[in-house]
Image (cartoon, rainbow, N blue to C red; front, side):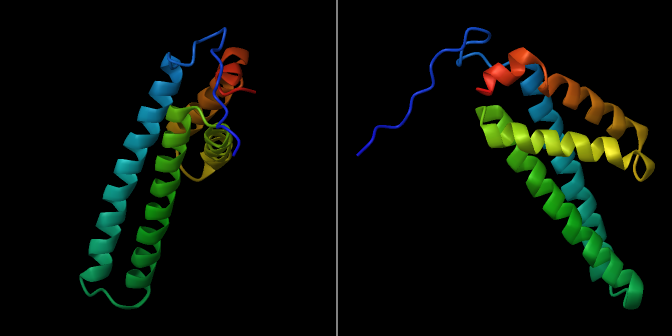
Length: 131
C-alpha cells in the first residue's frame, strides 16, 4: 500500500506558518456564511409565517439559495485554511463571481473580490498552495 504523500516545507512560508492573508480570507468567508445563514433564517421565517402565494415561494427559494451559498463559503474557508488546491480554486471562483456581481449586489463585494483575486494570484501564495 503506498504511503501518503507528505508535504515538504515551503521556502516562502513553511507549511507550519499560514499566510496572514489566508487567515483573513478564511475569516471573511466564515463571517459571510454566518450572515447568509442569518438571512436564510429571516427568509425562512417569512416563508413560514403563512404568507402564501408568490411571496412565500420567493422567500422559501431565497432561503434555500442563501443556505447553499453559505455552505459553499464554509467549504471554501476550510479548503483555504488547510491549504488545499481545490480551496484555492473555489476561492478564485468566489472572487470572480464577486467581481462580476457588482451590478447586482454592492461595491464592497466587488472590492473584496478584486483584492481576493489579486492576493490569491501572488507568487508566494500560489507557492503555499503548491502551485
